Image (cartoon, one colour):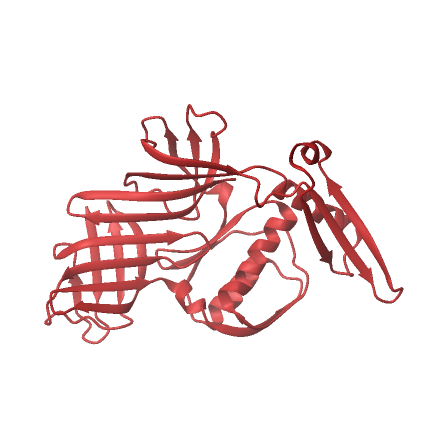
Length: 316
């Protein structure tokens, strides 16, 4: 059962649109804003207005809460409304300085400044080095801390708007209770293996400006270098880091980069559990494909009584 509740911020009128729409499309992406597109027959009496909120619920589960940004009128024949979630408001530039903070603290501070609602913000144990963000896109600032966590801890996190609340969660703690298997959503899929972005050696260089010297720290997988050739990741690191911190970062970075990247795209009948930022298990007869995969993108379309989806996944 679909519920599509719209409230005009001009008149205050509340509308149930599910009975008059011709199609609904929900597009979710990992660490990016989600979008809901609603198409219906044109009716000039309907009080649509920019900024009005909408909630989209399927079988009692809230899938989207956002605000109207686009009203596309097709010559008086049909209307297409596009709604975006709270991450849309983070696509502006601002300046921030944070010193020795945890990622959830950054999200809380920014959400407070932009008057955005927050939900579950999972605690982390890694404290970030001081960073100055001068005239940067706010979402990119937050993602800098998400990426920093991945590089330093090897753990992947998702930053999403979940039904109207900003959430930050470790992906391995967000595995859905559904397995993709032969005959179970995997009737039509494409599987790809690649080492285009893989690295089997990491070189970290730390400069001491007072002594005018540089120290190099190298971490490598000799076996994979023999198989793939030398794929080097070169980075400079903050001069304030000690040897233990550099070693921790170098080993985590090698563990993250030194592997075959596996991606899976599937088209199937819709299942609302499949939303970007979650993870699922894959168990197929195709050799080398089994594992836990991150849902990087999921697009759901609802037309009449038909619900279909296209899902892009990447191995954790």
